[in-house]
Length: 210
Image: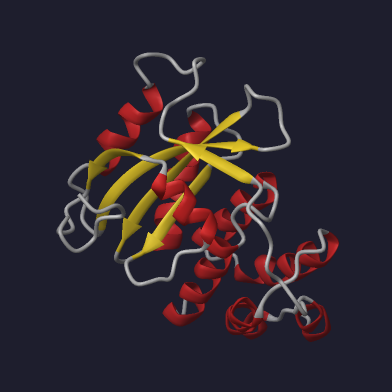
């Protein structure tokens, strides 16, 4: 796959975190990680329109760059551009796991074993997301990882790991080292805890200053 197209799609899906339903976002990321660009091109624009998710200019350019080369419908793509695509973050985040998580958190243990010292991976953190409009006990783990290459494939791999461990709609945010973070990710990182480090130099690829 063309790396520029892959990068555009991955960044767009990052920007859609907290806006697209989890049950859809993880699937789109899985398709991207598998290289199923035709499927992504057919379905993502339709989904954005169905859920009335407007894109700003930067997001629209990412959609065009990523999916038009793979056959996305021009009319559908152009219809996603909103006059004012800004939206408030309906989530809050906390670094502490909810009470229902076991003292020995098997998910964190597996993620630590999978990513600690791994090439191309920087810092790994996690946060717990709470929906302002949901019941108090409903919290969702959000995994935050920096990586320098293979971001869509790493996302897909970690999603599959979390699904095996019981999270049917995993929230895995694999972040490039050079990106202006959306408000969703800034809030998650500001309220996150350290899990482990990969092999990439920590001094240059920390998500949260030491």
